Image (cartoon, rainbow, N blue to C red):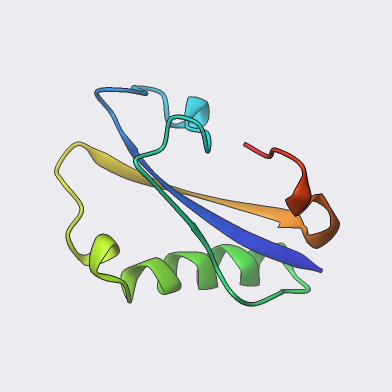
Length: 79
């Protein structure tokens, strides 16, 4: 099972989105669902954030990164 971790990162802090991690993200959100398919995980992660005020009020220099991690790995540092 996969869990979506959604990161909101500022381009002024991490100009390369691939360098966005839990440690340097301005916002970190865990989607309270589990998914079987990676594509489903990615789409629901984006949709979940869009339903939150933080997702509706992104600054011009902020970007969203969705990471789908195996549920067992959540206790480890990911991203």
